[in-house]
Image (cartoon, rainbow over all chains, first blue to last red; front, top):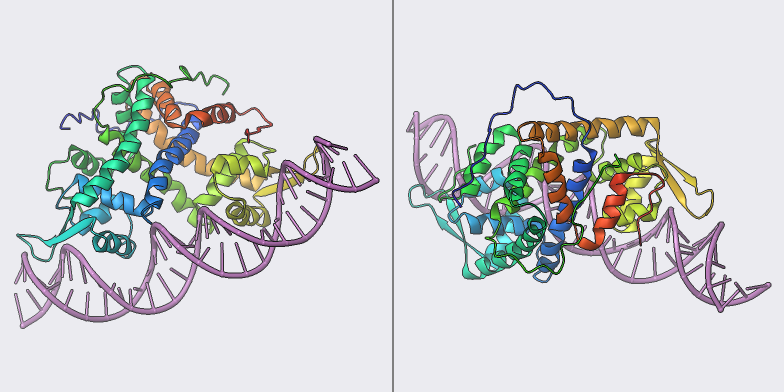
Length: 175
Length: 175
DNA sequence: AAATTTACGTCAGCCATATTGACTTATTTC
DNA sequence: GAAATAAGTCAATATGGCTGACGTAAATTT
């Protein structure tokens, strides 16, 4: 990765442009996400897992050594909600926990080989869909799509997300 | 609307391009959608409604006279799941049902003034976010973002979605 | 005219994912 | 030693999905 290159990171304080209501994008975002999640959902069902498991496994796999706190900040769910799903992934051998070497209160999370394999399979499903979409469009589209989605994120969250996607370990998400 | 102009509608049968795994877009889609839904979710909580109510109200408001069957095809949920939220929206005066003039088995759905008002408020929240994102980008971005999201949709669903977004009433979604 | 199909609604029960609030343990920091 | 932090846990609850079965009215087909 490392070429994330998000331009124009501050778009606050600009006068609201006179622009028609982008109903098309509102609705397309719904439909795109509906179908984007459908493929992995179907695959996960074979394992008795759901979308919540996918999200946890994905981010742990992408960011080995992630802490529980970081995961909570990424997913924006409560500790109790995460607990059940994470416990299942650990019990079934998809994720490993080990105490932090500096701070032994921490339980760093790692995907096992089995976890990596499942994560790769799910990522592949979503990657195929994205590649197919980009293949039907001009070459600069990847970059514009990336910028658009990036700017859809809450301004105060963008830094964390950019750092996460740039994905050097260890990943710490600011509190 | 009416200028939807989705180019290159068939992207099947092309050789899979040798493209790196677009992890950035996979993750950005998650974060963008996470924050995109957060604003309306917060507003809906005041009314005791959830995301499911939002979706129903949105599409009924945008497509007056929508049938229950159409809504099921759009949302891809079961009749029983829809029933609960729809019933609440009707009981609390956000949506009206009336029998179809041609086919009296149908119960056509309409947003009431109260429903229109809430839908407009929620749409505004999402529109603001999208406008802010587009404002930080080159002018052709709207079109590219639209095309990207459109091509993320299942190929066999795109026709229905294009028709829906073009939004002439009455809207019939193919079975 | 009868049979079938369609549109819609509903009952009952279940599951997954999320919530709040309270409390515990281990460890680090002040 | 006290306070803060990281993580885990118990209990109760809400929401939004699901399956399966069944009923009713109206339209369509035979």
